[in-house]
Image: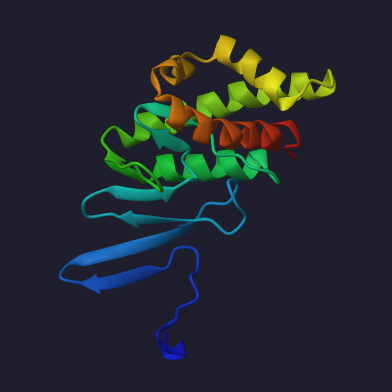
Length: 170
């Protein structure tokens, strides 16, 4: 890529993509310190990446790998909610309606998982033990039972990494 074609992304930056498409960039740290979300205000579509959680076939969960900063993540979710998007695009597995409700749901879910992970960490429990406790409290996890075995096997280590992030959250 020629150097003159590279832009340094800045919070609130607006990009005119042509043909009427204008995108706004927002820093949304928490999932990762460098994370950006992209918003198409005209159609109210938010490309949230993993900052809005991980959506997989109806299974929504936090995306909180270490090092995880809870307040940054919650602030980013609140910022995305304030945009009032109609649709939300995740980094993996699609774009969905009801964006604000989805953002609010992952915010509630993150706080629940965080509370359980922090208690478990103080009790010196393993991430596996903590995840079992989360499964007892979180309705979203009923969908895990419906996952294909191979998908679950791929997802499980990522879920444990999310739990590790919540256990060590600052």
